[in-house]
Length: 182
Image (cartoon, rainbow, N blue to C red; front, side):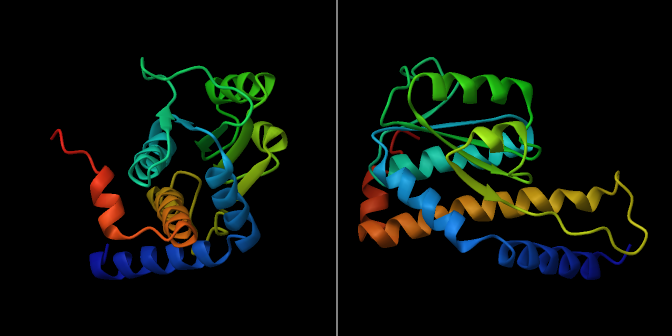
């Protein structure tokens, strides 16, 4: 493997996947986050690790944010939003959380690779990150399929940037809410 060429290829794939995200989906999700009373975040595995950064970002932007599964997470209600990160949009435990959120009147957002998934069909807001078609003899088990998660993380960062811009937040505002018990 030519490691330099591989880095370039991954970066180009990330850029192409980011460019393919529907701008209206990004704008709608950012607005829904700003409109919510409280923001709840859920996900498992790599997708979960990526989307949970959004909870930290929301907290640093002065919003009330919670990660599902934490002992301090309060009950969800109307006016709140649950945002799930799931590559497939079908992770069984995430489907259950989505159903519970909807049952309690909360809005539901999904960042995934499949807006037509089980959770995608329930979601009020979808950001679909479309995977690129296989190239050059790639197979399902090609390790480079992980670029999806790079793009999910970048999508979370883009949501933070949009919300900061809309709210007029500066780095000084973010630093004020940054964890100081480290």
